[in-house]
Length: 275
Image (cartoon, rainbow, N blue to C red; front, top):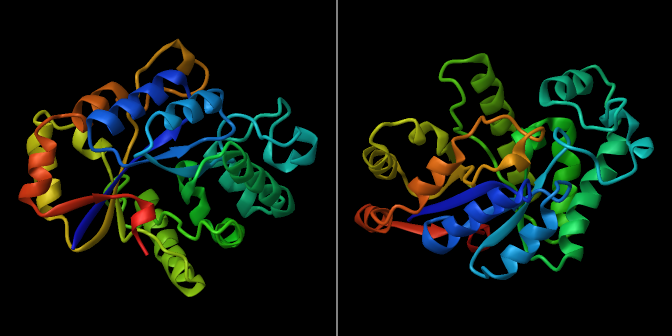
């Protein structure tokens, strides 16, 4: 059976992004959203999710954007002198050189999951901003948390094409293959493959590109990772405009999509539906 999770990342980043995600869930094909519990619009996201009960929610674990939930002095290896998380490249370098203390990273990740649960959210899975949870040193505590909090489902970004043929793609898929083995050994459920909507949004005829993507799907659980939202001044200083978020809203709410899904025998699901 061909099953497709359409997952919107960055829920909680800004109110404009939250509203775009909710529109894509109500009027489009988004089935899941990953919430960032340490970002400014978390409470707004919780309220919005309460008005959209069909939207499944994962926790978008975050050690590379914004500020930690724990006091900076308790996670000093994770933050700069202003108390902000390091960017992914600096975080990765510090992790590889032993300057990130896992004894600080795990409590911060736990606090992020616990904040979502304390808000009354039903968490269907865990994933992470920029896929850092595939790093072997961090995958172990993430698996432990998933099992301990009875979530037991984690995104695996295997198959994600970053820049075809690039070192970055090779590294991410190598990490993902290792992550899949470890998830299977731990009895943690996961998707079979991941594709990014950004590869479709750049097409002039996105419906044709979407049709080709859907036609290419094989049996199993494919996740389409997307970043819809409405861009407002709130994003200034939080994130560069690396995603064409408003175009993604247009794509994901296109009225032709349900027909394309039916044509290709694809069932929309979320992480709560997979075993």
